[in-house]
Length: 295
Image (cartoon, rainbow, N blue to C red; front, side, top):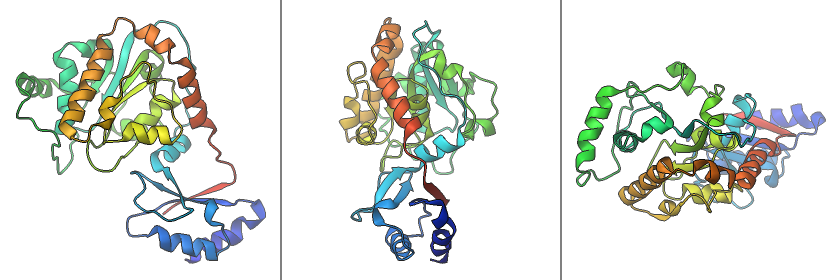
């Protein structure tokens, strides 16, 4: 690959030894890595970023989460400073793009009146072309009707950002983090490979404990990346449930439990050590001597 050879020559005098690649699906890791090694890079200095958990298994090749990397670089806002002042909201839960399973998730909070306890945002104006609902809705009972009514009332806004600004990683609404104790992360996917997006790295950067409605093993993946998950305060057993409907039921129940809690402040303060650990891990990951190649 001429690009890598050219890069090797261009950066040799700058003592840059690490390469980060964000590859499109049509480029194979094994091909790119082989070219990079021929250009003079060491295998241990090659890093491949992916939105989902690694789909390749080549010895010595390091993988990192692409949105962790991109969010760190694109969002230059000052991180929320940990504080123990009382907050007006128990949680933040934000959804920019409508999907049926996401609507059921947010409608469950709304139907119990819990939306009033949080920074609660849902936009049903932006949709996906193919919305396949991964949860079994045959036994949802009244939640179906609640969700229909919920969608008629949408959109719910809790800030003044435009839709495009919501989609841009560089924008942060400080109050969503500094004035709410917990963050309910409604990830992009509930099934398939683990995909960790900027949605979970926002609370990590800004000192919020999180519950993640996402793919099976999302919490496990975060732990493997070195992040702490507030296990003394949050029951993440939902993450071990393979069946998407049962996992969704469990994560919704945990969100509701936290949103109803009258001890949110105490629970938050109990997370101090883990919050600071996560924030520092996110902010201080070694990024010097790294050239990021977005392909």
